[in-house]
Length: 334
Ligand SMILES: [Zn+2]
Image (tube, rainbow, N blue to C red; front, side):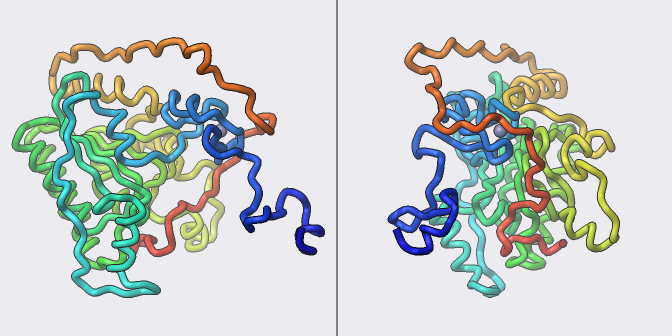
């Protein structure tokens, strides 16, 4: 143990590898970022990545979300070949081209939006989801183009479009090209409205900037997950600008529902049946079954063992008010 480790409190000592020691063992356990409870991973999975202790909706990837939302069989990815182009040869601290290739390498995705054709209780539809890990889910050419083409397919086939969004806003490295995507996606949504093809938007934490100002809040029905942050500029920027303290819960889904900005808040485990029922009403499609099958009792050996060092579930605390978007993503709108 080095001299510095000896004088540090045990919680911040580093181990021999130089990594800080964690009270959460790897593999089977996951710590909730909100209530800090140590959770048994299979329990979290069963609960669709919602904390069983404090109901915090953890962030999940686009593919996982779509796989859970759509019926198990018969879904296929569409428009997979659309990717961003660095037309402006943009460079800030890093070259945009390098940012793109490292995001592609880290996520295995070509850009921040995934599109699938599939069914929900046998009702055919197109479903989209933002991959927040890809450049903060920011909207550049590829995201706008994929959304618009997916909407055109929905229009041609007269099937509903659903979009799960999670985004820091417009992709400033694409400057005007990224801002144009707001107009492009808004225009195609208007066309869907005129032709009576339903579009449902589901906002998941966080939704900011140019995405909240276009496709995320233009649904025929705008849904949000509980406690999701959604707004145009972040609360810190607004406070600095208007020099006033913002009300409690500002920009959270509950606040937005109370003030009429969204239509409903839906728990993640209720998303499938709720959207199913809504679409059934909008399309007059008789759904085979809107009830979720009752999950089987967990197998005996499947029961959660005692979590090591599980803290007494503390009072949920407010998560950080600042959207956790990489600095490079900050929407050009802020
Ligand atoms: Zn929790």
